[in-house]
Length: 428
Ligand SMILES: Cc1ncc(COP(=O)(O)O)c(C=O)c1O
Image 1 (cartoon, rainbow, N blue to C red):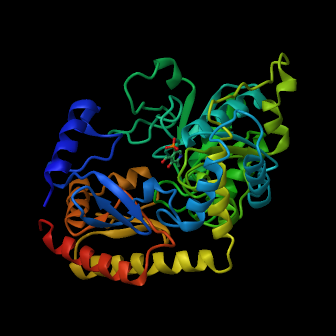
Image 2 (image 1 turned 90 degrees about the vertical axis):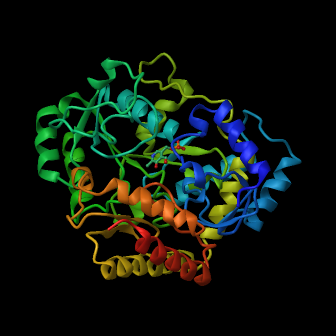
């Protein structure tokens, strides 16, 4: 039952926030709730209800909420000041750790959000290559800036490489700056590069696109093509960074880009993200280049924030403990395989798509390898499934489940029970 206090908060939110929400996460009226607190794998709402959380703050909370090591580090830092706009010990240590952990990272520039990290990675690529256009993949998400919101979720996709903007308010000229290629289709990408290589500043890709793993050879092929044409390759590791492996997707898949954007986990639940990359490109950010025509301007009030840095450092220290990634993948595999088994038994045309630590159900039996195959999925059924899960105390993203180290065997058992109940309540 929703309490009077929670109903009042939802009314205030509906009045003061557009759509009553913070972004895109919107539950139907009867299921909306307001978070009061979070601990480990659980969220608690203002009415006192408990939820097993697979949204995890949209990914950062890989250790679970309020992890003692992170809380301790943040509490200690709070007494030392919360932001300086100057070099500080924690942010230098975090930069050094990124250089140690991430194969492509010789230098790091911090931002506050993942969107800024991809935006500035593209700007660095343009300055370095002295070209303007970028290539991205249909269905790939790189945040909410104008260059990123192109053909992320087109309802009726155009012929490649024409983009479709995903938002009102983006100047039409930006459409001319972005070329769209099909993810996991190396032959078409190669053909597009053969025509457009000389105009391109960079190619940006989510190495694991939303839920879709790269086909064998796709990332390697993309690396060889971009090397052949000397076009910087940018991995958007905002989701995969420190999740797929300590060194991110580039370690996991064994393909090293020129630049990478990190976010989410690296800030330990605080606003911090980063552009990392080869020194030759990152040096465009060096202020001694001002006036050379190669200098990339990038500055932000909260960039290099020490509170976020200590939260990130404490999170990374936990992730470096022996066996961490094995544990995370084992928990995820039990849940993912359990869900796949339930889907098989249900007899529905559906499958689980993703990796053990990030996956979701897709209601189609068509093989999934790119954005267009995803369009064959029954979106209404997924929405109904998400709501049935929520009724049973399981919170997941609209199109994604994130697994954390805080999820216990008991959580997984309870979640699989919720999945079973949710599937049996769906319309035939
Ligand atoms: C792959 C990817 N890139 C970039 C972003 C944008 O990050 P932020 O929300 O921190 O701006 C996201 C956010 O979910 C993401 O999933």
